[in-house]
Length: 105
Image (cartoon, rainbow, N blue to C red):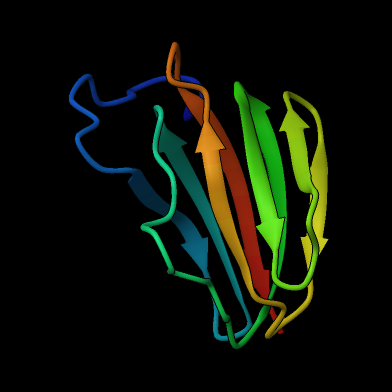
């Protein structure tokens, strides 16, 4: 049986992104981070909406125009509308942060 918590790569030099399923209007991904963050000056500016759930670990997201960092812990989720510029400021360096990301129109 597939699991979001199994078969995690041991070498995470970069974030691990795995598409679990997709259609023309929806893409569901598992993302595994360990101390990863967006490169300096980089902002995501996506064409589609994105629902993000932190399954394990923790992370901090920054949204353009806001001073605060939105902290997400296991079980927390956020819905990011298309073209809302955001970046990953940090993920837990001590363990894996496992995200479930749903990109949709």
